[in-house]
Amino acid sequence: MSHATEGDLHAYLDGALSAIDPDAAERLTVHLARCADCRARLERERAVRDRSTELLAVALPDTVDIPPFEAIEGAAGAGPGRGYAARMRHLAWAASVAVAVGAGWIGHALLGGTGEAVPGVRSASGEVSGGPAATADRLANAEADVPEEMSEARRNEAPGGAAGRAEGAAGAAPRDELPRAPAPRGQGGAAPAEAPHLQSAKVEEGGARGAAAEDAIASGPPSRSAQERVEAGEADSVRLEAEAVTPEVLRSVASSVVDARQDIEARGELFANAVWRPATLEEAAAWLGRPLLAVAALDVAEITVSEVEGLRVVRVRQTLPGGEPIEIVLERPSAAFADSDRARAGADEPAARSGESPASAVGLNDRAAGLWRQVGRLGAAAATPVEGVRALIDGVWVTVAAPVASDSLRAIVSRIERARRP
Amino acid sequence: MSIDWSTVYRDTYQELHRFLTGKVWDPERAHDLAQETFTRALRHEPDNPRAWLFSVAANLARDEARGAVRRRRHLQLLKTETEAGDPVAPAGTARLEREETKREVREALERLGDRDREVLLLWSSGNSYREIADITGLAVGAIGTTLARARKRLVDEYEGLETDVTRHRG
Image (cartoon, rainbow over all chains, first blue to last red; front, side, top):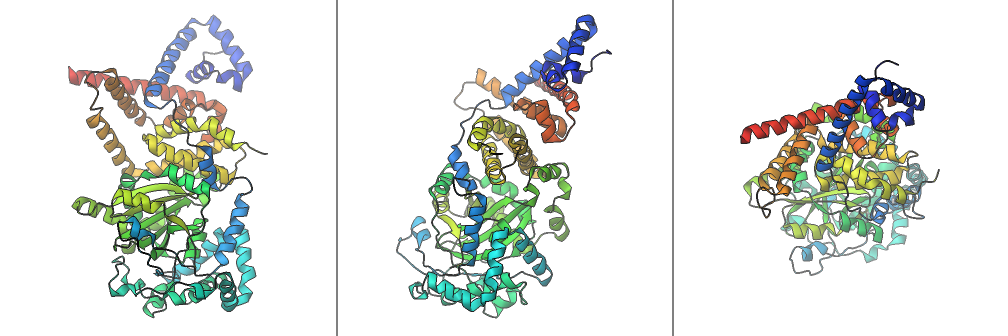
């Protein structure tokens, strides 16, 4: 045979040549026995190989503590008897429920308040797209992303109409049990400065509005924009219900909370340049493909969705009892990660990923900047540093940022629950 | 085909973490990404777990590491490490030297082409030639050539950095 190539020699040294092509390995062995040049080259390549292995051993960790598998399993919802399909069926049920259930005032105590129960928080959210052009696409995409079970549940539900759903909802949790409506936020309560117009919904209207939102999903794009509805005083009411979270989920939270301030600062640009579209709670959950997560018992000021760097992202803005805005960004893989082949294709052609072109084409969206941009600004001023933590909760990466002490923020994170329309 | 994911997890986590550390140079972040990768795997239950895990991890790391944002973070990380060192360790200890070596190896690795670095990290994380081919899409016959080039470049770049440091100190 002719002289061996460097590639052959490395494959030979790695023991790979005999695994890939035993005949070639045998021929090379015979050749090396006869060819002094190749033997010398083999030794040179061996030295290079050994040296590179030595260097990599210095730079890369050899052994690390392996987090408990149960945490991953819990996060993925893959525990025994809780497969993906089962979880999606559960989601379908959750998505169809429009029941108001009061939740305690947790954040107040967490942040050093009196801890006194102040029931009945309310908030408003844009129910439909911010623009007619985006509406059809967004709803179509959201629907397309919903697992079949959920879509079917919606279809089955559609003929009942809003009244039927409201009735069913009342059966699950009588409206008599609803908490009293609090004083309107506009009378002194604080809310994100960027969305003052989202503060007028009344809690009594929650059930009916929730049913209306169900209609919006079941019957297609609504005719009026969220802005129009808000301005007309018809803002949808969204309140979070603390749904039971499994022990697996709680374990996964405990094991995964990490400081994310640096991460937030680094990714602020990405988020600031993304295009965010208003969404209802259900639409956002469908976009995420997972139950929406938010801090239980706090207002939801705004829910928006975007695709950032190929990842589907939902941003939930809430307001802490002290009036500080808190921003929760939920991320899960986009369809690009649906299977390994497509993931690999995405690896080779990052420019083709859908997250890039819309953002760069549209440019900076003022509403998109939000707290992510404030992180840098407030951080520079050093008056109210924005802390950030990141955790894997319920299979979703959750990044939480707020201008509060890091201990408080971690306590808040422990109160993050699945959110659903009451 | 039924896959025992707890076994896959136990057998692969360390290697995946090592691979990711070589991609993002932040062990804690590598933990995050490794866990995220496994979370996704449990949902998708791919037939070829190892190739899937490393493919998705590479994608996650790529997202993490893309663009100027990542370069700034990396530089900051290196700067912080260099400045901070280990304040309780006396100067000139083996630990400090090891940290310096580590920093130089990272820098040398960063100078490799993306494909070469990826293949080298995949090999270093316990993948066979066939597995590397599966993950990267390269022909299995090209892995040896790629590794030969990557290893030589790594050693050359590292030695170059060492020479620079020696000359600077001298």
